[in-house]
Length: 280
Image 1 (tube, rainbow, N blue to C red):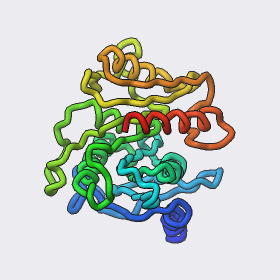
Image 2 (cartoon, helix red, strand yellow):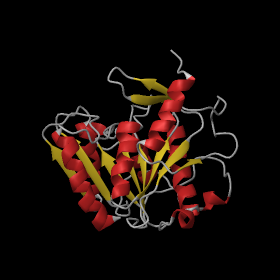
Image 3 (cartoon, helix red, strand yellow):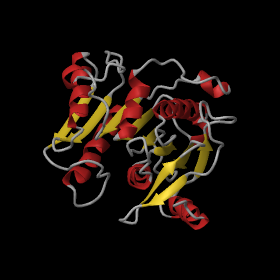
Image 4 (tube, helix red, strand yellow):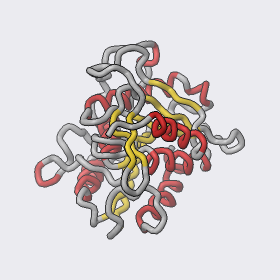
């Protein structure tokens, strides 16, 4: 079923009214690299529990959330929602996270990267996002060298690829923004997937852990089928003598965001708040 205009209006009104979105920053001034469809509005869908997710993005953009001036700490976080590369859980793993982080003083950019099934496009979108944010750092009142990237599930995989593959730009140069770095200054990896594709569930070969890999925070639970991803990433970073912090709880499952009543969902934000103060 195609979404109605009403559902589209509800989707964007919710992000602005409920979560305090302050701006939208579209990534690609002309044609989106590798995209076969024309630019169009995100396509939302409503799940049985009433939550709304995005099932198609052809015109990637950043939803911007700025803290109160009195709270602003000059640091920024790009948030990449999960969804298995077929959808984006933008409310649970995007806007709700932005609401929390802005209260801590961070300027937050929720990335609506390309879906469905466009992994390389998603990486291009994150690289371009980091470059644009750095180019506009003064506009948003942030330090261009203190921009972290945070991802959930598939979004965590996008973040790891941006931080641990070649720094070479994956798309044709668009404008002066592309002179900036497309690598995050810190990585926050929450219940990741797709990271244990190497021999014996080791780190996926595409990703290269070195002593220069940026400081990384990882959180997952042992009852998550994707738990080997967190273990593989942490082990590779430890072996490379990179700065990594891993937290593994016994239970919590997957895809819990910050939902109350789930021990994992209630634990990771407290741990991350401390880590961010020390590392970003």
